[in-house]
Image (cartoon, rainbow, N blue to C red):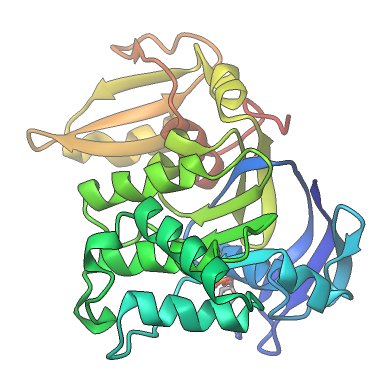
Length: 297
Ligand code: ADP
């Protein structure tokens, strides 16, 4: 199954162009949609999840027209939205059962089996009788993924799932996602480069409603190899360096800025070559002066 997004555009009534002619081919497996806040990720996710309309363009999942055959899509869709604010005074087990009924799983014994298996998968079995309003952020996210998996979706959309999770919970969440079969299209939207690096076989970087770069993360990184350099500088030199070089990131080490730059030739002047990373790719796309070093693959 493949999700195919063609020339999708959306302008909100306030004039914000949230999606500008987006086209993406998303095969089975984990796809990372990476972009800063306001890039248009949630707008795209909600449109794919049949929750909002686009102005132009089309989306297909296999033979299904996502924008027109909404009910058919909802049967094969799992969605974990960015805001999942339903934490009532009932237990995880009871609420999952309720969702399972809503998703059309009518057999009681089948529901029980599915729910038990998902509670184990998301490591919530021991706390299944506890009220959801006492769950930690990580537990709530794991509950969210359990409800999204109830109908064994062919298309799973997870919008910014690790925001606010501590490293341990993030890892738990990664592990659950990475177990989801290769026969599912999983779209993970995030502004956290690590999420994509750990999990995704394909990715796209979007900003201001445009796709800046798409492809396989390893190949994209390979493309930058040999073009990233770094140097420790004085704070007051930073602006000059920004003028002179294609500075893609700056960080502090023991109070001194270390800058990374993109350069096709050895810039000399004390710069040392470093191994390219996905962060470099991301920063070069979002903050770099030119991005011809990382063409769309
Ligand atoms: P992301 O998920 O990448 O943070 P969003 O899709 O939420 O991005 O937002 C993209 C842009 O659209 C932002 O500039 C945001 O302010 C704007 N936007 C999102 N939803 C609405 C809305 N309902 N009405 C008007 N503008 C919106």
